Amino acid sequence: MKLNWAESLREAVHGLAESLGNLLVESFHYLALFAIGGITAWAAVQAVCGMLEKGHITVDDILLLFIYLELGAMVGIYFKTNHMPVRFLIYVAITALTRLLISDVSHHNRPGMEVVYVSGAILLLALAILVVRFASSRFPAVQSDTRRGRDGDAQTLD
Image (cartoon, rainbow, N blue to C red; front, side, top):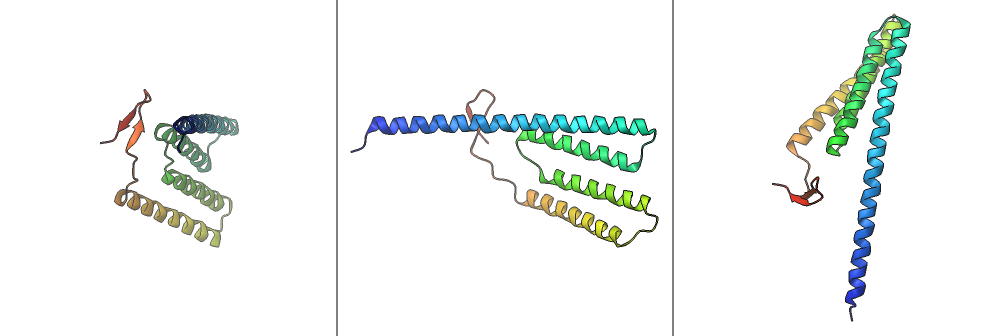
């Protein structure tokens, strides 16, 4: 014999636990996003202050600022869409390797095999971006049937 009150209580507890879990996870995401965004902005300001103290700016410094810009863009995109674009991580990696390559060549007058290795890594990352872009256009992400609007009501996607 099935007890209706027990089943309805179980469903209510399950709904409450799911709602509380969603609240905690979303709160953590927002706190982490604000922390990462703030730390990125702070690091960029410190880098600019260091450049001004030096009295000159190098290409390495400019590429470092591009890395901060890309990290900030990633935070902004994730904040707005709740999706982390993998391409931006690859862009950061390409910029970091380019910075390493320029730094290595400018500080060591005679380039060695390290330049070939870093250039090959940049080429592989560029090909990875090509694959990711092709795959995302050819096989778009599946969206759920409903999403939550700003007022909390479920909305159907058309």
